[in-house]
Image 1 (cartoon, helix red, strand yellow):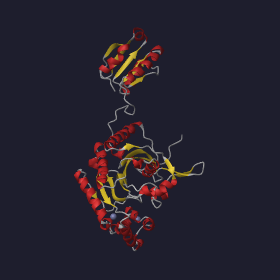
Image 2: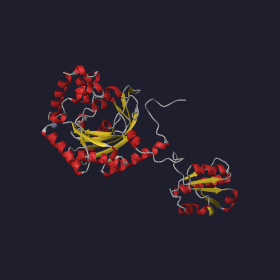
Image 3: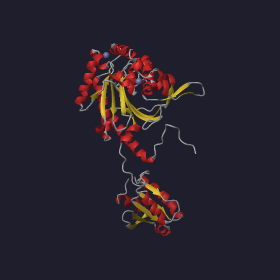
Image 4: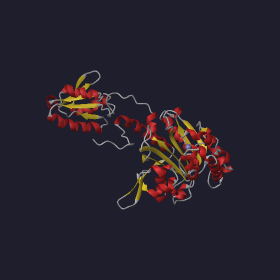
Length: 425
Ligand SMILES: [Zn+2]
Ligand SMILES: [Zn+2]
């Protein structure tokens, strides 16, 4: 037997209903806020991610599925959606549309990480990006929309909204902070783990993410970005929070929330839970005002977020799964007895489905008792039995599964009768 690859998982029919629920809710919420769907390729040129995520990030250095195709070009399975979406935005000139241009996408992402509960090498994200506007009201709207999605899924009360401002590069508030942080970390390098020491030189903000307990005392005493924000960044953050309050979005400021990507500026945010162990972030995002230009596009600002679908599905309650819930519940189960009846029932089934009924046909040639048993297991509300005698008379026996009550119905009136009996899907 050939098994699936380590770190990937099948979404079985019992689980798929939850996935569909999440996706339906997401489409509903995103479209209500004016977002349009964009569907993107699963692989891109490797250099897109190197530039769009940042050479120094863990994703680019350690986690990408990169390969040469048969023509020798280096390609990478997308580890996140933003870079590909911005590439499409630039390539198709979408920036000429009224701004902000609001786009969403969903699908699998790929990262070579150590698999653990809730973390996979092929995982799924819902992703939105709002491009071309840097107003704080947009930041608040994006966070509000994210919270609204979880509210519709009945999960909002179990999540905390954490926000922070990372300052910006242009006004020098973050460069000033970075210099302070690096100086602080270098003088305490002997009390930091190897990864922290490495990150101090390559990507110092990420040091604050270290989970090694031994590093905590040093990191807890590190300078805080919030103390270094310039006047514009301070105002932008205060306004964002004010608009969140106006939208009744409860949130806390997390001074150490830095996120993993290089190009985040100003607003960053995460939705976290204590219910999933170490994988505590269910969704996260932030503003990346220089990134579109860096990828060769116009100097448009942008903000977006990604939702980890596996983690959301983990939080959703099982939708009480009666026997047979793994299949779409048929409302009607047709039982032809004998070959002539089977041909007629296949045609009848097509007609009934076109009327909106969910129909399955017992074509296994089993005995009536076995077929009725199967109809029961599948959760059918009605069984329709047609033997040779019924076929000759142009009739069918309609059996209500719950009560066992039977009645005889003209084949030509079957659809009307079943719809009247409440068998509608
Ligand atoms: Zn460390
Ligand atoms: Zn600033």
